[in-house]
Image (tube, rainbow, N blue to C red):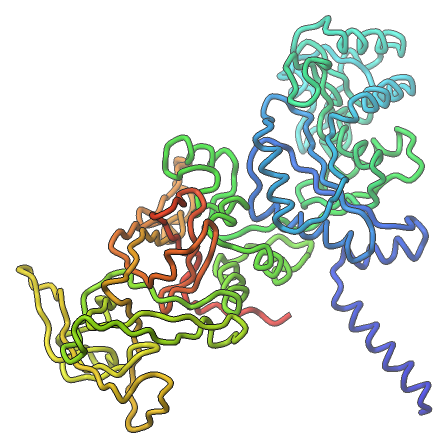
Length: 569
């Protein structure tokens, strides 16, 4: 084989490997571009501003913005604000903040569906003139009855054959506020016998005399989502309208709308599997109930998986992008274990954050042979795996705090920490040997007495003997006291998410508040949102909601270890 043939074969192999690594949406986009269906890629994230976004929305944001970036196209953030009964400016602001935090670049491409209400009205008039839409006087119950079932076809509305002129007049009267809510709707004229119920003359417009957060009282009729959404995509020049699988049955209606409202380059809808995470609550009505009943302290409670909650808890945009990448994109619905999300944040933080010493359940350790009143400052690397994070000085003295479970008067088998006669290393400091302990009236250990060997100072090169255990500590006189919150899953995994009566199995231990924690004084300088690894305890973040000078709350992002292993792709 010649050199040129070898290079060509290698290139073909690389191309094949690249094709294999692409998801089905990327392969579809490649095909569309190659066949000239589109000459660019334009995607969007179109949330309805009626609540806070959650981890499932993060997948959609990252997928859509990532595709636009990969293909050098455009990405839009568009608020689907066609339902004024549930929408609030509060949700608009929270969603925008979430999208920006995730790193999705929409620049000046921020849009509202309500910006297009005039065009939508014009397109509805166009459908009436084509004989493809009519005003119907049936009420909601009657429309439901006429629609039929999955096994029985529907039947035509008695108003289906109104003339174009009558429909135009009635629809204009609807727009002008001449009718009460619920008395008239505009419906598409498609096929009441269609096997797809979505195609049985769906409603396009309904009357709603409500003030809209963006358009005020200009409109008293509002388009339905299935009519508005494809028009919004078409107006913005979206090429691939990427949505989750529950909209697959709506795709024929999406295509019907864009094909019959005369767009030169209509967008195409593509569906992918929604992200389901085990043992979490994502439903808006359930979260709303948890908030209203005071089970959680808001939509951003760190035990929830709203994007705001994950941000407050200390998750990073990088960890969520890594998580979405590990989950992948497919057409098959499946559930992802919450442990996989935890794995991703551990992997992201372990090289980025300093490893500090905090004692959550302290007892005092007195080093009897250390000079009384003397304080020395020891060198401590901020992260042994990342020297670029530098080092710091930590105070050391005669009296320290250690974790209660780092001492046992009568050790269990294979216990390698402190017990009478046993020697361990104090991290960044010296070898100490436990001598005795003091107890309170209930028999609980309150003080451990020990001796230290001054020759064993960390970094001194001492090699005289080895110890099997290393424990962390905090110098007593300079210790900084703070509140620590330990989080577990909000839902009781043993019993499942919901009871038979629809109530949720709330884990009573989903949040444990520790008021006894002591930590090294450097943590006193932490700011809102700062995160750290607390040696042996996990990763923790300063709670932005409760941050104030002189008093801080640290919340656990994730514990140190897990049995989860990332599956091989």
